[in-house]
Length: 391
Image (cartoon, rainbow, N blue to C red; front, side, top):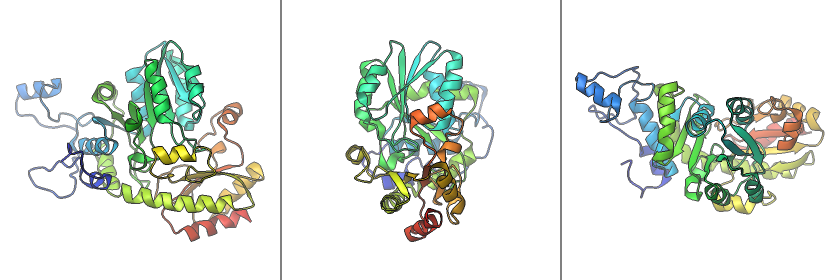
């Protein structure tokens, strides 16, 4: 089943990665065990050495986690996926497996705040150089390459301004310079975008977001060709920031409805973005599904929908932004995204609050910016909720 390539993503989201035991369970089994019993000393040696398949210890081998990895790999059209404890631990694993002191990361200037903090404060601490390129300008990526560049890293659409990068063009630049391209696919999920098919080498996921879809558990993954994923697996096996069996089981349940949810998120987000664009209190709306978005045409070529995240700037700066956040009664005031429940946050003081004012300015994170991860409530209720704080 997991090897079939002729199935629609809607089917893969439900069926891929299914590994039934001798009991013939219909739903995915949950293996809550720290270790696995072997048949003999020789069996133990062969399994621990990787000469034969099998499970030994749940830090790095667990059937429920394997099912999650296989399902995600099938949805991304990848050879392999390895699961991690969170999206940030997926980025940690990627960097520790593929970089060493003296190497250089060329990253998108539009990244999640914690990713920027990790690159700037920790990778540099261990001798890895980091610089940034404008996500929407391939020429800036070409100009940013150094002789020691080993990794290109980008989000598309970016968090929170929804800049859309040309994955194929940036992949070509990376490969011409002997570097890998990793794409954070959190905003789109594999239902809306498949970066590997566009030329990327590795896909990063915060499974906490849309893959779960209900704000229940943390999780992450690194996805791609086996030659790129295996070093990450070996690092995670030794260091331990891996996915728990319970969280993998919850994520498997969430992924069953992923295609349906993503289409509904996109539909709601487009309607909300259009409503905001027409509102006199709003200065600018950032949403790839709008014709006014500067990369709208590119987004519609490499994505199958605009996604569920809408950001917008209010006239009146921070005061207006905080007033809106405080006024809503339906939306959840939280920085998480990808949930069936709509969430609202002020990026300059939450997700990007640890950045210096200069770094926020460079990333385009202004004080009047609001990010909404549009959920599955009725659109009329969402617009009515925002109207409470927009006047």
